[in-house]
Image 1 (spheres, helix red, strand yellow):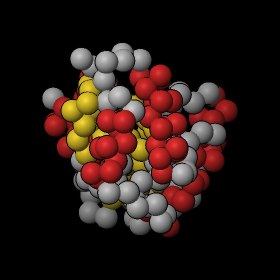
Image 2 (cartoon, one colour):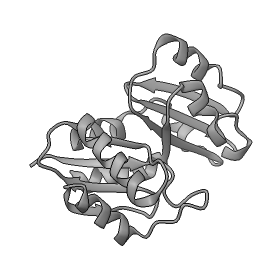
Image 3 (spheres, one colour):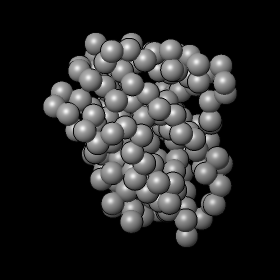
Image 4 (cartoon, rainbow, N blue to C red):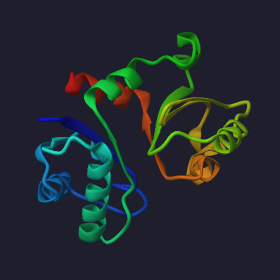
Length: 179
């Protein structure tokens, strides 16, 4: 049976607190099995009899909204996709590992069109460097993320669609678990 990882937006941030045991139960209610959570920020690994990530994204998002009472943007990736995302090095290692720098991956549902790409790249600054690849944006932040134009919804506004951010270390850890 296919395995997936769900990256959820709006879990345990902004006053939306969800116990991981409850989140696992919600996924099981949505027809998923072998459900496990990684870090209490909306990372869920699971199996499904469905092979369509698009159908599952919609089903899980609708179920979570029904159960939690607010929209939860849901972004699914397969283990193969996540391994590729985790292995991708869009910035020089010396930049990404420099003290005070952080590397994030933003997950979104569909590849950005040319207009959205221009808006996203327009967010680049002295502290923010961005690369896009498929349905992910890699963000190298050279400083505090809350000093960035990207932080606090700027990325979603430029992209024109919901997204959720994860630290690259978290993404690599989840990829290792799925391997």
